[in-house]
Length: 542
Image (cartoon, rainbow, N blue to C red; front, top):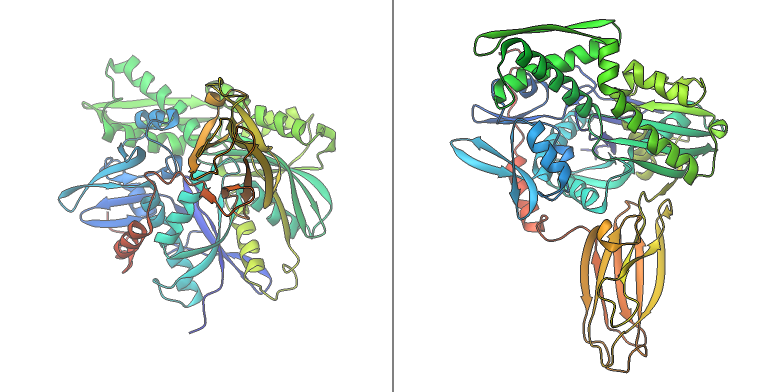
């Protein structure tokens, strides 16, 4: 059998989709229900694991066993402040596993804990199976893919995404930032018309904004900014809390600790939010929501805008930042590309248009599919497709945050400061090398702490990893020199190497927060759980 073609996957917070290049066109593949997108939801119901619309519709019945928004947890520590917020907003149980965020469910009569990588792998496997079935392959075939990630994902989140793909038997050709993928799709559709593009990408759980120069088959990222914990889910939560307050005001009852009521109300709020994109108001009606009481109210567009105004204004901060970082003005932007389902909210479009003094916003590409289109184009390009329309694609992407070391001014310095080795918005892949002397006489070991961030004070930045170089040649202070090399590959994964100048003493670390992350043996075990593939279920059965 011919090896299946390379595919492009948009692994979204709320929805995911997959595409392939066929006859020079990017084709988004429909799932078993004939839909182009699949809810990024995994359910453990009646002894079966399912993905997509079927478990999503049953969230209110099984709130503790239906997992959504897992992208918000992937690559994060349990004590991350954003994870602690999600614990209060998401109905299922979030727990700590080796210090990392994980989820706990009841399945087949026992308590099980799944990592975000595993849950993401179940989604990826379902998406992959959709593609290989369409291409005439088998569900357990290994397939090459380009997978999209938010531009503001850190190294731990990137590596966790790659691990999830390995579990799903997907070989990652490249990770590509979501706004860059959207720009790639735009450039391809516009036949590489030269211009400077601002991509405003507001999805279900993440927000990215990028400025990208498009010309002659090349997408050159000039600057990126964003928030890896801001998206449609946050708008839903604001709306949802408003409805809880309305119910409490009318019936003097608090539903905030009732998981089933919360799930029912969230589903209604999500539908109402969509209606407000076209109607002036939306009814909120839930029979027997809690203790026999119904919820009957309505929300107007004006009230919704008032509730969400602060959140929408928050997105303009990164827009201003990328203009400043790219040394451009509003007038230098030729086109504004809207990506992500949340950009359908009219108030977002109005606010963004006003910020750019009435400039038109581009929604020619389906905001739900633009990112997958770009990933698919890059997958075909990297797999050496002979289609002349894609063979000359070039990407020049940048890192979203500065990366460097904790360094000390001398022996008496106990605090240290952050010294940048690779500044934010540096194009990658890239390599940077610097030399550091020993600080003490006869020093035989040196510890290297790698951080990312923009603050001079080390404690205000994020620690990525720590490693040591031992067996350093004894010598007076500052005589022995250590070469430290920072290397970022095409996926944005960082490797730091320390080598003693003049001999072969060396050590290195690939920044993936190894402690508590998955080992190869764990990945192999998780692969065995996914294949053979998930049982198909009659989706018409309620």
